[in-house]
Amino acid sequence: MKFKTPLIRKQTIGENVLYTFVFVAVYLIPIFNSFLMAEEHIDFYNKVFLAWSIITPYLVLFLFNNYILIPFLLNKGRIFWYVVSAFSVVTVAFTIIEFMERAHIISDGYVDVGILPHQATLADLAWYWNIVLCVFMFAANIGIKKFYESMQKDEDNARLAREVIEAEMYYLKYQINPHFLMNTLNNIHALVDIDAESAKQGIVELSDMMRHVVYESSADRIPFMKDMKFLENYIELMRVRYSQHIDIKFNYSELTDITVPPLVFIVFTENAFKHGVARNRHSYIHIDISLEEDMLVAKFENSAHQTSLNSKTDGGVGLENVSRRLEYIYGKNYSLNIVSDKEKYCVTLKIPKSYES
Image 1 (cartoon, rainbow, N blue to C red):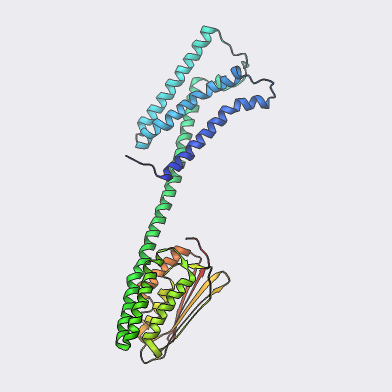
Image 2: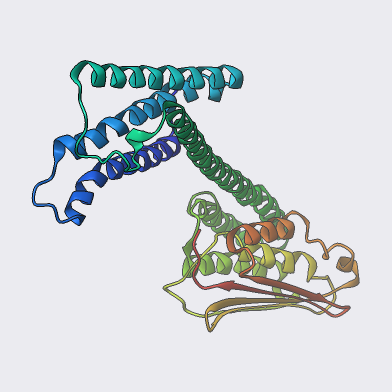
């Protein structure tokens, strides 16, 4: 059993509404015409009913084509049989109508006095011109259907593209989880040999951070201050591990009405600690996140050391991951600038303070 998706139902409803509007308008034309001619009484019999009797065969043939011939023949690729069937049905229908009209006139001696003999109307068209007109109607019917099908296909493709992006976003976001966990566990492992008590506290903080990563970061966006608290916990863990070996500064604005994509800033922070610290050498990591006009600006600067110059240009899984996520989320409405030399490595990220996910 086949079920129509909401999108298909929407397209079908739109198409049927268009057909209904057109035919209702056509059926109302004779009545409106009488009003426009300022007639005291609408001549329903000689004018309106006559016009409707001419229009009705087209309506019946249109419905037959739209709901039988096109679905069962044309849409299934049986083009030859569709053409043969459509032409046969139209020809037979108007031949019968022409025969019935002639028989009625001859038997009853009926003459329509409401229409002058020299007046050009649909009633004066020969049966073959009715067939030609009906063929054009069928062609218009097919064109409208193909137009709506094209719209439906475009919307289907757009919906599938969004689903693919959402799936990849989901993958990219949760690809960070094991990456973050591995790096943090390595830090705690190194901390055990330095300060066991601090390592215990680090494990507690790790549980809080992992709760943020696993649960809270599942949303498309999270409060800015909650993400800053997450960064603070991570930085404090790193501060205990490296002790006096590194100068760490972390400043951010108190922005309570802004939301941000989760697990973006942590990637640059991890990268700074991973590549900006060298034993027995002065190292520093400075992080500043603030609001500049309508842009949220995050600056990450760390010392550069010869041992990390070869590896930090790519940033591993994290930087590639977050770059793709930023592109999906903001398109061209963000900037990511990375500058490095022998002494320092700087990352400047600018994202809109508000965005539509």
